[in-house]
Image 1 (cartoon, rainbow, N blue to C red):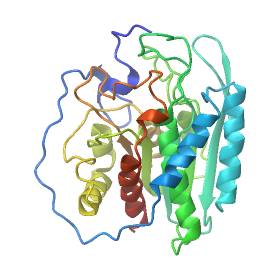
Image 2: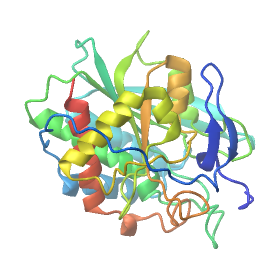
Image 3: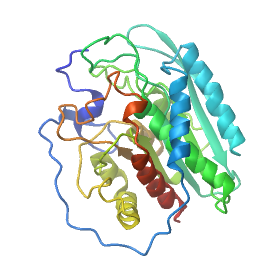
Length: 329
C-alpha cells in the first residue's frame, strides 16, 4: 500500500446518518479542547486485574499473527471460545467467509459470548481479534504479518478480564454480550468497506433476531504505554451521552491523563457499521496520537506492535473505566 495514502482508520469523516461517512484527510485535524465537564456522583472502583488482562494479551500473541485463513488464527479462535465458556458465557460462533479485493477467500469467525440471556436490557462490549496481514507502515518486511499485541489483542484482553470479574463477583446479573469481531484488519485503504468485514456481517445478521444493546463499547488499541484516548468524533455523534459518562468516570477514577477531555479525529471502525445497520449506539475507545502522520502510535501497523509496547498501567486505566461504565445502569 502507498504509505502516502491515509489508512481508513486515519480518515476524517463527515458522518451523515442514513449514509456512511464521506472521508477527508485528517492530518490537519488537531484535538480541540472542550469546556470542563460536570462531575457526576462518585464512581465505585470495580475489581480489575491488569496482570490478568496482560496475560490474556500475551496468550493471544503466543499463537503468532492471527491472520484469517492461517492455523494461528484458527488455534486462537479455539482458545477464545474455550476461555469464554470457562468464564461462564454462553458462546456462539458466527462463521462465514469473504472474498477479498485480491481474490482470496477468508474464513471469518465472529465469537460471541453472552451472560444472563434472560435479561432483556443488554449491554455490549466488542473488539476485533484478528491481526494485520501486512506491516504496511514499517520500513522493513512490509509483506509479513504483524503480531498485533495492541491492535487487536489488547481490546480482547481487557474484555476477557472484565468477563472474569463478572463471573467471580456480585455482578453476575449483568445482561452482557461480548463480541470478538473477525476480519477487521485485512482491508486496503482505497477500497471501500474492505475493513471491518466481520462487524459488517454481524450487523446485517445479528446473533439474535432484533438484537439491541442500549450501552455498547468498542475497544481498539487500548494497551500501549502512555496511550491517550480522545473523544472520537463519530462516537460523539452516535452517543454523546455515553461518551460524557465514560470520560466523567475516568476522571473520577483518576485516569484523566488517559481519557483526555479533547476531541480526536473521526474513525471508520466497527462501531460505525454497527450503528449504521443496527442503530445500536456504540462508541469507540481508540488510541489517538495527533503528533504522528497516521494519527496513531508510531508502532501502528509495524512489527513493533508486540508485547514490548503493552503497559499494565494503561490496561488498568481502560479496564476500570470501561467496567465501571458498564456496571452503571
